[in-house]
Length: 158
Image (tube, rainbow, N blue to C red):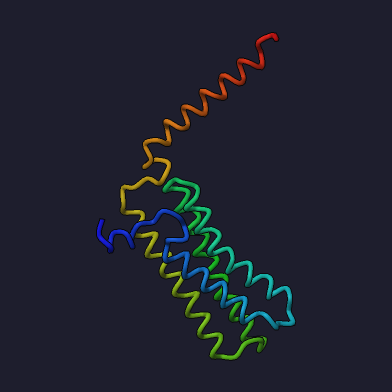
């Protein structure tokens, strides 16, 4: 395998560029909101930022294309929520214009990255990890087999 294909291999959500940028956005949101007096707004914008990276991770781990797409849409919505709350923060003079612009641009970039990722992912025939892994069904069959043995042994008089 050449170096480029190794770099493009995604084995876990941490490998996704959209997740890495969401993590960066979350760091920046925590940094700029650290000294805000409005704890409610501070909590809300932080939760929205954490929601972006959490939903990307959760969707990826769900293992199906449809579930991943569902969570990506939620993540994108949360990136929009971060941008909206930044407007509240600047209107209340919690952050200077430069910080607003920098973090707003990060949130906007993240939203556009997710949208492009969704568009590309929708066109691929890949159905997700559960569908792609031929051993997944074998594993499920084996687990069901074991459950059957356990349930039958529970009904057999000792």
